[in-house]
Length: 313
Image (cartoon, rainbow, N blue to C red; front, side, top):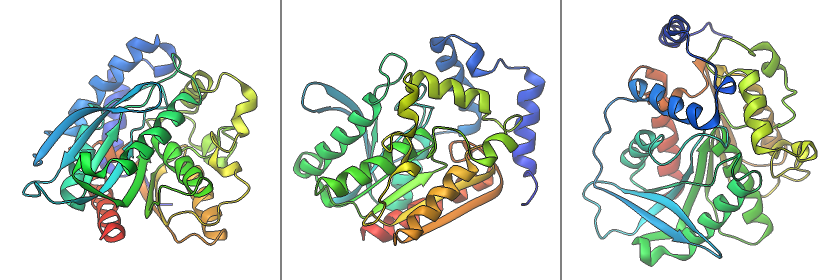
């Protein structure tokens, strides 16, 4: 494996020098605020898109907040749709924390991008986030006219915890006869909630995401230990991955979740699913959400956008 990229190393050294408290040592609300504030310097200024609209998706018994991005100069065009589920360990994250990567994906894919603000743990433990991801996907697929979009051309994706949600809704869509999904974009997804793959131990400390933080996220999201091997929580434990949409699986070489991504990409390939696995060897977890300071973050976003555009057009 290549060494840690100098840009990633500089980030880690700056965080070490700042002596920031780890997520899992803080109260949840305080940790959420710190998560957002620490992201801002690495994200840069938001690139302009044609239109950004916040709306509520009305599902069976609740409303799910979402943000819709339309590319510049594409008003009145029924564009294909990419639905994104943000990362944050099912505990952090919202429409604002992932606004900038969604803007880049919109600009570069020439698709309507919809970011979903699913419910978070510990207030709403598993399967609340998954239920929101599934219900929002169904709403999008059924409301092309309301969105002025062509929802017959649909892709889904997410980063980290959101990648897990994306992988699971793809399997559910297969099992329930739709919606038809043309591509799944899984960015350093969590696929094994037992946290037993080698990189979780090898890279447990010192590379942005730690094993201790992962255990904290998992325990807040999955308070029932028996759920850890539920395929809806750990996609790697699904017995049948055949018939799923083609996949782009993105990983980072210095991410405790590196092997989660690789193991799931291998399992998809073994099941006959067309899968592209790309590992940015010198990167750390969360690198796509740091475009102002990590060149590979911008490159990986472009790669994801190219895959979305190709699959939907």
